[in-house]
Image 1 (tube, one colour):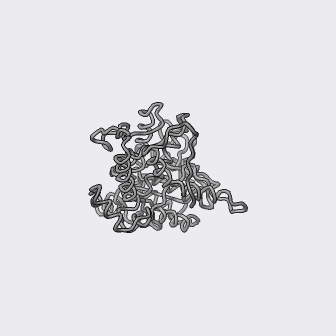
Image 2 (image 1 turned 180 degrees about the horizontal axis):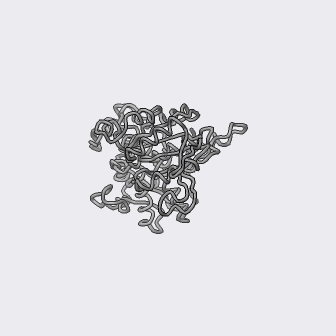
Image 3 (image 1 turned 90 degrees about the horizontal axis):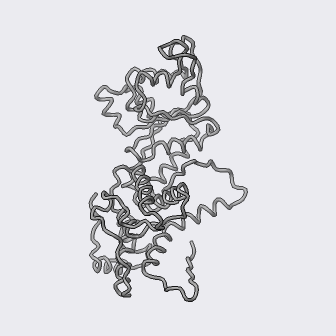
Amino acid sequence: MGALCLEREPGHRPYSSADLETVVFFSQSLPAVIQKSLVLSVRDCPAQPVDPEPMIGQSPAFTMIRTLIERIKDSDAPVFIFGESGTGKELVARAVHGRSGRRAGPFVAVNCGAIPDHLLESELFGHARGSFTGAMRDKAGLLEEANGGTFFLDEIGDLSLPLQAKLLRLLQEREIRRVGETRTRRIDVRFISATNKELEKEVEQGRFRMDLYYRLRILTVEVPPLRERKSDLPLLVDHFVDKYSREMGREKVFVSPGALELMANYSWPGNIRELQNEIQRCLILAGEDRLIREEHLSAAINPRREPAAPLAYNYFAAKSEFEKRFIHQALVRFGHNKARTAKEVGLTRQGLFKLLKKHNLGEKPAG
């Protein structure tokens, strides 16, 4: 991709091992940034849809999702998105909409578990004046507002059985009837639904209609948890640090290699949402410091509350510490594949194994 050149003015202190660690860490993400810039600078290329929140990731699992989105974007068939809480299911839904022929139309999202059941029907389908206490005027529902665009039903597994029956009829007939009305109205909407529940079990236990289940799952996208796409972590961290630094009106803040190492070894049960919250928290705790350090991380990620390692001015000690961190971060980045790690960092396999033995860097940690 190129070379990274650092210069310092005469009279300034020499670069330290900590400087070198920081440069190595950020150089891992530079190729993706450069490639993106090169693509955007090419003239006469077709305009691409701009996502309000971009999809960040280069891992094989995330690349497969991007490929699938390109294949299904222009179909009107329902899309079903499955994944753990916090993995970014709505982000995928918005990406499908934003790349489709419906992108000029509205994207309307509703969380089926956040609205009481007795209000949800009126919110979805609308109501006529006087149809119930408090209905002072005719009101269009969210489904009508989504006409010509995409309707996203999040947490579809929380939808009650009576509303499941009405949704099934809607998918079949493409017509709605407001609460308290007899006339039907045609709508042109693409449906995307999502859940973190295993709907097969919900069907077996009678809590979800089998006919609706099969109707919704014509096109399925499974979003992997963050622990299965750890190679995307540096890119995600850089993206959220940049985003929240701007929102706070601060200069760009960076992450120390030690803090990144602790984050890479954490399982992230809350997935992307937990990572976002962690970055915001760290930026607040860092104060005026432009470096997020180990001590800024929450107890779940840094249970020993380890502070940043003091800067060693002994050349051999600093070299050894850098070597150990560099090899460990490379192993994490390349999924603990030793052959690939050796190739990517420019070592022979025998050279890598010597360093692993020297620094007691063993097998991939459990979990």
